[in-house]
Image 1 (tube, rainbow, N blue to C red):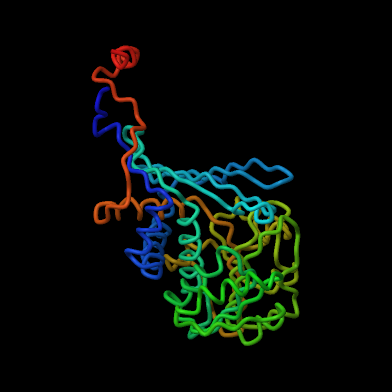
Image 2: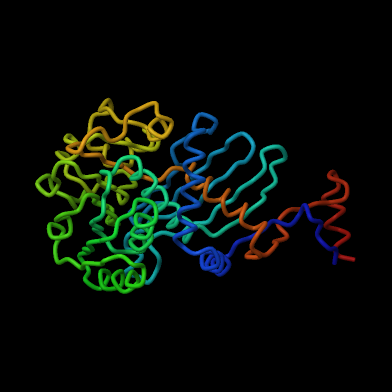
Length: 348
């Protein structure tokens, strides 16, 4: 049996190794560092290939590919979203990703991205809130206490500076789970019995629900002046969380309009309804929060550049942390023209 060359070996970060990496670095620090990578990539937005994710929809959910490139590296994520999975004992969202060199097409990283997506989604949410949330925000309402909840709360504590999170979920067990997990984070955790109770006194409202339907998680009368809304649950056609009237009262900020207009809250609005791209705010080309009465809305659907940033971050960490294995993924014959000969010689 031949020993694979170094070129044939691709670092693979398994779920076990991702958990080891998160715990070595610390989840709060890791979220903050991923946010730095995302911010750096948003500030060079025009270098990236951009396309809406490629989605295959079914009655049960959606399977998507999310590709992008900055001209030097290419990355993509495979991700699913199946709201009924939890009742069947499966994760609602699972994912893996690949980072590759553009110059020769060779992959340089294969990674789990179920955990990493939760980290990068939380990092993106809090990064955006750093630009849009009211200054001095201390309280966040978290409506939807599933797999994303704790990551979001920790990200907003670390990056924005909140000290209180008000939790609500239609399933009290989900709220109890989140409250238990957040007990040691230093946050004041308040479990609420209704969404109206959750948003009371909150400067930031995060909605993170999974139903594949046009839902109304927030009604217009629940949203007062001056708040920042972080709407991260709406991520496919026919799925929304906010009443349309909230959108009409808000200044709306998005990642990539061609994708968000199909998948986000703004699918409820006309195609020419004004939105602001976040990269322009980060570069100082567009206004973010103007005053204390403005309602800012991050219509988050997740974009490939954020996954690219997260993969780039993980790849950089492998130089410092032995949290990967090398997979023999690439055929690498001595003579690039003699693939058949390589196979034949392996039999001897």
